[in-house]
Image 1 (cartoon, each protein chain N blue to C red):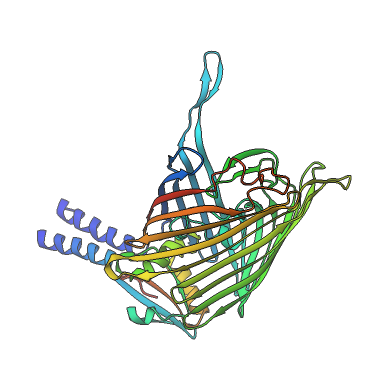
Image 2: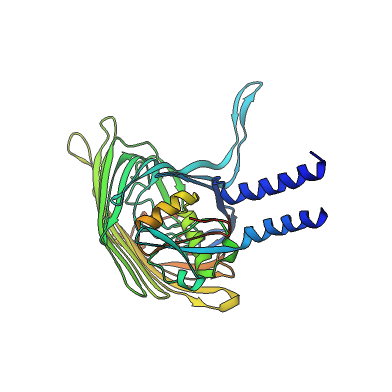
Length: 358
Length: 97
């Protein structure tokens, strides 16, 4: 075969393969933020470089999300005198699961899963309008779970059940700071937790509404306390208008001896937005959010307001800015500062650039 | 020969950017127009041919990618369309069900 024929055959073969091969989809996002808290110095944060992998065959599916957080610098190794670790940032698997579709009744997932509440399921910077997370985030629900879930929707009825273990969300252990501006706590892993969700999904010509109730039982390992959490959520889309709301309560941790070790907590938010279609210039979405957090061992309920704008020049690019301010509940009746507000970056202006690739 | 090679390369480029739209109807799959695609009961997004999509569907691809809801295998798309009346998907020009 001459070189020209070989080249031609290769091109034709490549054409055919590119049309029918189903390799994994690779996508993800990058973001960069500037945060100016009222009570601290402003700073830049390169929070996410994110890699999503997706593949499906027959009734099976694989999905994974690898996250490089806060400009990861892994610098771990042996030195002449021992072992050094001067790493910064975080490299972790946020989600990784295998999924199997069981006919029309639903699907089963096994792996590292996100809790199936409204904000966790949609918290990705490219598709939410806010930079500042609501106070519910990493406060009430254990946010990710190593385990199994079954979920589905039939005749508008939403159902989900899960079991597994995840990081304990309670006021103990190590801490880190999230976009909500609050130092979060947690650390050790729980025992076998379980929970579920039941709701209804209503759709119309310009309407999409989901309303659900959720519950979870957290059973911490090795004689550590256990607790329960309950909540409700609503997502409503009417044309370009969107309303989200979630409210949840997490009970006090109950020790094996029957005493309580952590106070009961409640958190919730309501967020409304409207998207303006700017034609070839993209889409502009102003939003307003009101959120609150209460720890029942304190007398004040912290309440906060957030206003902001998200602009999509094209669907894959997001520019956003928001202003958040605690409006009440900063101090308790005895004059002490509410523990959720104390030292946190709740009052701030934040701006973020997000680039989604696929 | 050079002309033939150029034609093949043009074909590759055309295939990568042209999209076709499909809808499931009573277990069969039919090709529909881009405007009909906008009024589908349910849409299964693929990552293929995204350059051709309207902004609302490009937004849908972003959302589906982030939520792990993309369907990247043609045979999986076909089985979903056959099972769900009124559901739609799109694919590259060379795809046929």
